[in-house]
Length: 591
Image (cartoon, rainbow, N blue to C red; front, side, top):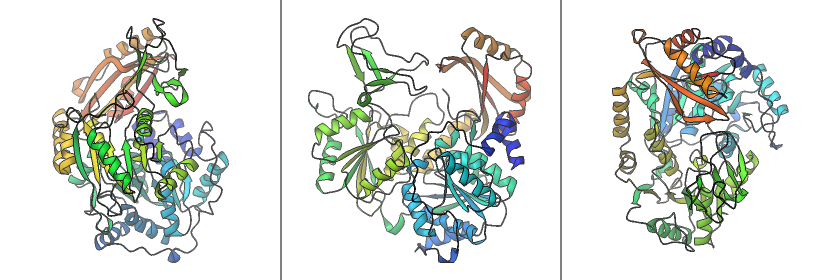
């Protein structure tokens, strides 16, 4: 464990004490929200009494391959399969094998608050609950789990990325569910990619890792092609259920009529589909990956846009709370009635839709439908999440409106229509993974439908239907899409074909931050060391939480020890105590 801590510290260019702290305790700043009281002891008495599950022949073969990895040393297996193909039941077999041998298992998930169905399936299969590790637990519960893991009494833990640093005494398997998910990247404090660090821990301790996903990351796909990982593939849905058909709606030609004199965000085709679906008793999911009511509030008279006082970002309107909020620092104000700049009354207008605005329209358009909105703002605890999921499963809901929090892991048997309201959202910007992320997100959302065998359809509303990402989703040609992504990155020597690091120089004084960045560029590593330093430049998010920010990007080939070069570089400049230098190896966030 100490070797792992030292490795993470060295690789992420982080003081070892900060990494050690993650392994010894959990910050007390976590919200203390009501925890479940009905969870029995998380120990396994007799693995032979575990419930037998009927698997298809392909699932049995996949389970055999993964189970045989236990006690055979380090390996990485990519368990890939369509949404609804039974990947969870397959890797449960490997979990079972590890438990039978008396070992411990860690299952990492991207969104612990929405694992209600997963936990119930685990209890049904193994006769008990797993240990839980996430910020929704009380300090007492975290303490008990931490000690139980250390003593070897807790055999299985399901947790968020921080669970990787628990002091397991006999860990023999790590499963990373939805391995492609961006949530595995920690962006604050110790900046690390939990998926990659899990593989490092497994290699140090000598046990297997299972990466599970219906839409694996390009990094994992390339590792399979190079022979570093083994691919285990499930080519069909469980019990022959069909994937939903995917259709693009060209919003340039298929707009809808106004509702109560206001613009509608639903096309004619999608509106008709919603009405037909709920009339036959099935459920609809409308997906829009944008929290709040509107992403921007501006004055129609003078053009003033209301911005955060601490960040270079617009305030997002949250109409239900009557406030404008910054999604970066949490700053908020009561929604003003007059323009703060020109004092014009009734001039402030909402620009663009968020899920609250979509919810408002659906209530007006389909007043007879039972509609629910699911976002990170409405899910305040695991108990609320469990209640909402149970309502959907028991058909107490007709139309579900939500963000990406609904995109993964759920099984809703009567969901047959999905409408992606803004399929173009996320396709643009300076993020090299924008296309890949959009493809994965829409594919995952689409996979929530048709899981019980009913015919289903996903509509993608788009103003650029000719985009290659959307065309790949419709055709189902995932291989060609990934090949095109790989080719584009290979040409630019970007990950996974090259290495990348980000340095953010920040200070409450803009001049001090700028001067430090200029001092750093004067002594930056030369190209002869195999690296290319880009910058400094003003960061896209030039101010965050009151700090002014400048950015460097450092590129290199795969064989370069980028962390060592950056550490040596930083020692050449006397950095003021008022300046923070944040190093992000393998960045996912380019803001």
